[in-house]
Length: 46
Image 1 (cartoon, helix red, strand yellow):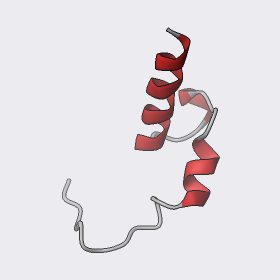
Image 2 (cartoon, rainbow, N blue to C red):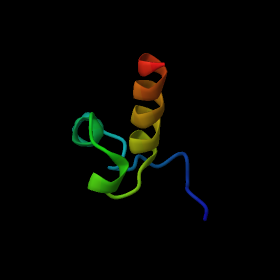
Image 3 (cartoon, rainbow, N blue to C red):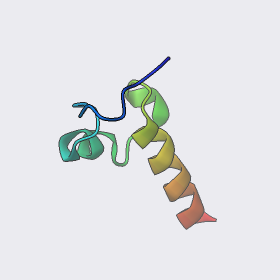
Image 4 (cartoon, rainbow, N blue to C red):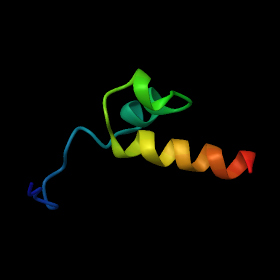
């Protein structure tokens, strides 16, 4: 898979970030924000 880093993609907006905050990984489609949010919350708990 190749992504052009010079083209703005609508998958990296504040709206998308807010959609993934606090959700479990199975509640939303796969996205890097879901993985990052899970990792961040795990660090806060441990």
